[in-house]
Length: 509
Image 1 (cartoon, rainbow, N blue to C red):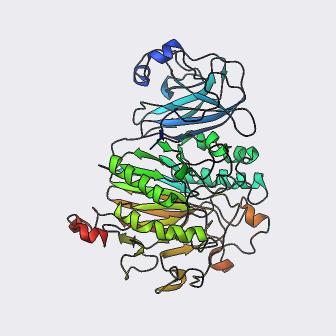
Image 2 (cartoon, one colour; image 1 turned 180 degrees about the vertical axis):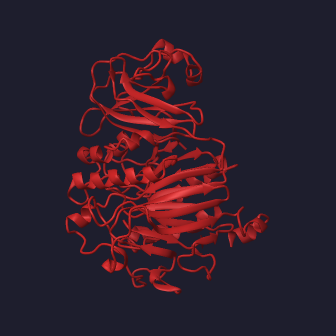
Image 3 (cartoon, rainbow, N blue to C red; image 1 turned 30 degrees about the vertical axis):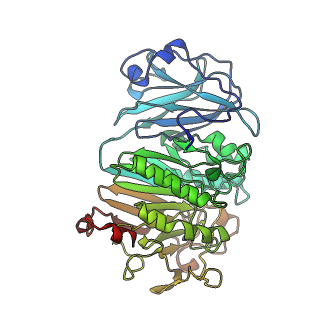
């Protein structure tokens, strides 16, 4: 594999790394412990689009931004307790940035990896250079060694898809505010893809990145089909451990974005793949990538979470897309064999939560629709599709259609739904998904972040004729209320402890 780690990457048009002699000599650990680093000096630059991203593990963060100039730049970091009246201490550490000319829309993009973070610590940071700094932002690390982790999953903000960027941006910002007010201890924000409607339209990216929440909590980016049509996605997000080889990339390296990447956070292995690349053997290549990552980095991971854009068990408009039918055949058995616990997906702008699926089949024929507690057992996988997080576009649920795919018919226990899905929901209100890791349990909950009232652009603009539960039969439920909740006991959890010694033949059945 060709892995891009930290600030290293192929095909850079321009690379000017901001390192003074002192900064080169000192590690992050030395500086956070009281060493000295001096920031680079640079000509005046306009710094925009700053976003905090995930690093390779909980001790790292990646900061990405746009700059009007290609001068040497850094990220400067210090414990927030040491920043007084906005002034960083003399021993604040600087992490050198890779600065690269933008392929589209001019200017430059930069990224730098913050390393050697300590747990349970508030940090402040800014980007730029001496005499030309951005505003100061902050983030807080939490316990690195615990078995508890809360993260939030967001489906398709797709800013601009309603035709009104401002309204879409307002809905997205409100969802972030609602979600993080309710979950201030969330440690990760995870993307379902389609950050914007048009890949290279920077006004849409500006609206997507407007909220300071994206500078306070790390964003785990996922590429969607609307992001893949140009280089802006990669210019805005630098992801760790990324393989941009052709099978994972979906097209020319000069015009497309993508790649597969992974990171380890606490005892969770996260793997993110570019599902836009699916033809000409790409699905097999993705499976090989996931297999390699699990084999090399899965030891000791309590859970494996897989993320990609195209929901294979779509409940709505994309249910029987030709590419989805291919993925439905290619992925599920491999995911079961690899021990994937949870698959998070977007693309369908509606919510669904699958039954426990093993090797592409319902694992327990008696599992009831909407069950609030399940034991997944060896090889069991739960698939979740996220609804729109911005309100820019919703897709209505579709009836199972065996004329389009004979293998994706109705659920015998609930014929209105597709056989794979325990829950399918669309109310034309914004939602997000909260995942709580509690030792051997995963608690997955779909929560309303809005109502039928503004900001809800698709409804405001008359693109939906109804809003609320049951196709408009009732008033919208309040913000923060639960659409769906399930407690998933993994192989080591309830009803699974006696399966620890399951045979290989049972695992592969």
